[in-house]
Image 1 (cartoon, rainbow, N blue to C red):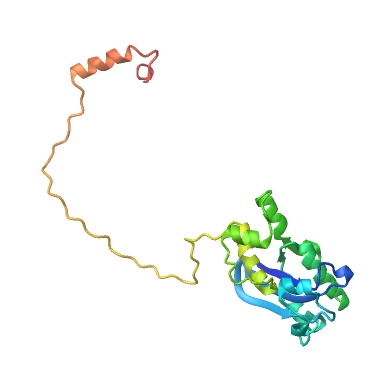
Image 2 (image 1 turned 135 degrees about the vertical axis):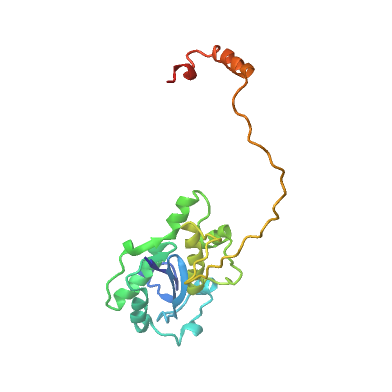
Length: 231
């Protein structure tokens, strides 16, 4: 049975949709049975407001860059079609779900239920109590390559999170390779040279009278030996 999930990340103008902050980028990565399929949904979004300098320092997106990008309402149908009914894998789900649901509300759509989110932040805290649980920290813990991460980016972070999620769920089995088909090749084992052996007759297994006497003497030292009670 194939299990489809969507790894989701967003970038925003700030920290609170209740204070007017908006989405500026959304990235989704499809995974099936914990492995990325290559299917993604990625959009830059015109937030219809200014992008504070502090936010731009985090994700690198500026007012000028976002000025000609579509608003969320123009992309909402494609977004909802892509995610379908799949669970949403998110790091710190209340943050991203809060922004996505705020945008859906503006467009007249129903909110996505929080129960649909698979939050990797509490997963990581439970697995590694007391250890840093940011996405950066988890990537370093699991050896996920961060060399291309100069800024936070929704699609990049969703791809990183997909790798982290796989590790949180148990990790890869490096020796397990799944293919659509396999050819079975049967080879003959190398034939070893047969050593020349001299004939050896069968051994005589009947104990000698001396061996029998020694055995009886040994049994006398054992309390209620099974040999005596049998038969």
